[in-house]
Image 1 (cartoon, rainbow, N blue to C red):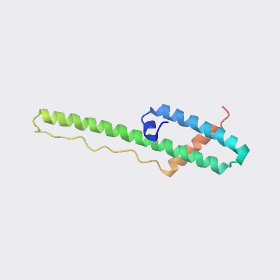
Image 2: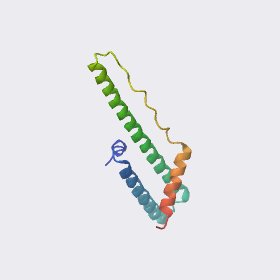
Image 3: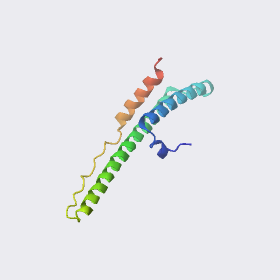
Image 4: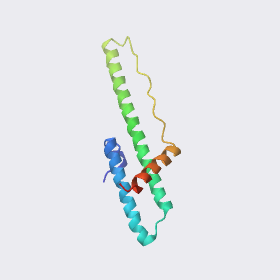
Length: 122
């Protein structure tokens, strides 16, 4: 079973494909359950919101991890350069900035995109 942490190490496009496949699976499952338990639109929208939140948060964490990895590499390079110069020059790269964490509006917009995807007939 793939954990949340392991999923963030997958390529972004592959993670999205997995999540889109998950959307289709959930819709099929909800459709099947509807026959048994009469799932309603509220439950489907809740699942779409959960998926949208997870997708956006995974993207945010992956982007943050990439920025931090790059920053750590630049710090290591600066340290090695300073060490080779006898520590006379210890210029470090500036602290990285990160993309803002997904907002409620972004999550809702992503859920709407997912809904359009699963309700399209193509």
